[in-house]
Length: 411
Image (cartoon, rainbow, N blue to C red; front, top):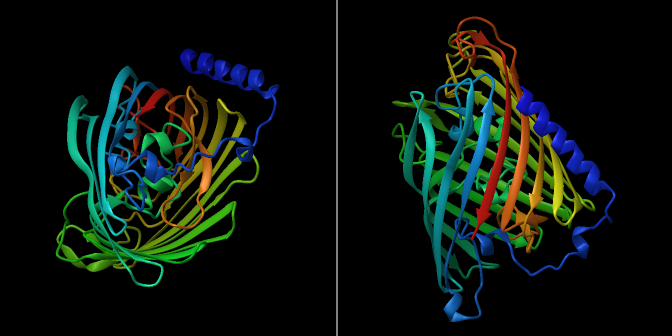
């Protein structure tokens, strides 16, 4: 606890120190025309190269950290195993992730992108090394209208407001909405069509919410509309449907997700709300449908070119104790978290973009090296021996304090 108070104090001192500096706006920064797709081929959309020598790109990032966790959770935790799996009393340095990606453009109508991830996570209380193909896809554009893009293989889900890759986050950890309310990866085929500069649509057929393979014979579908009514407002509405239970191709999960990104002045505001319904999976009323709600609000402000602050609140209301939340024993619960983070851009060389696709993207600073200080408080309104969190003695508790210092380097 002393370390949390000390680091929180440093956090506040840094904020006061920079508050007196001259305010800047994103519009004042040099726009080098670099997007997420340029910086990271893992998203591998439609980067254009005039120079043939630049048609093959190698890029990636690595993450190191120090984590302090008062109470913890010993098993897999949604889409964010590195943070969520920290047991109670964690106080350790870690080399968390190395990701290397390669992209190659063959022409205006064909390109590929792939990436290998090496990460550490906790398995049975012990650190384990995980190596996997993070993404790997082939992209083809048919000369139909404005260009119909086919993406085949394994790709990152375009549903959530948040990105998965650390250089594109505003804090060290993900929201509960990202962890539990949408898939992180999809393996299948995605069709993207831009109707105009501010309107696009996607249709996705994929195996399921698992990062690789499927857990039954059924496939899932997703449909998304992206719309940017003005240059600093981006919205996307997604609908996902499919059977997501192991060895069960009948009972479907349906999810409606609405995400918006607003960038007025030096602010970046992220909003997301999700509603889920799963057939015949209610624990509270067996035989009925299970319903759940999730949402998050993220507020980020860039005081100067080298420093910004982020505050976030997110929740997941598991109204009926649905299946599929790989957090603990099934029961009715509402999970909440509030996070405060500061980020120091050691080399803010680029003006980057959040999101995927052709519509105008929400701009924010992307740095070659970021240093982040984060305090996070999680709490759950549940009781009994099957609570998510445990203290160091293994006793059930309903909250967790965490502090993370994270260093992210992109190349």
